[in-house]
Length: 201
Image (cartoon, rainbow, N blue to C red; front, side, top):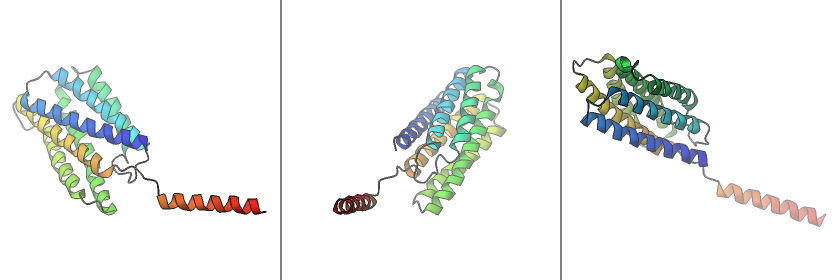
């Protein structure tokens, strides 16, 4: 149960950090590309660690972290590359960011569909967020903007939506299993009867 709580809290925190970073990029689109690369790399590594923890946790629905192991390992590797080689990747950074956001949003799209099957009330919110973020991710990949500052601002906006997507999915699909009190009572009664019969014999 603790691992689920850690994974849920970590996912929410990483989503909030993404929102704040996206807001910063939107306001300051001319910020150093190397600093952006390393910051995003660190966030991707954090997200990957949370995904791996979530995958091995005892999540009730197993929706938010069902692909956590593969995505987590991929995220840690990619984040490390962004931190170690920021200059080499500066020219393709928007494509990398766009692909990461697109891939994660497509998985969120599937999660929203699975949430609907489980009967969760707000599955459609994650669906809308995943579609919107996917479209923005594709826009970043193809980069139709002539200005680098405009491109960074779009990356910032997309990052904010991506963070909101993570926070929402974590809040409404990650559930900690609770003990069944009726089952506990039944087990206690059974053990009591067994002990009583043994004493009588």
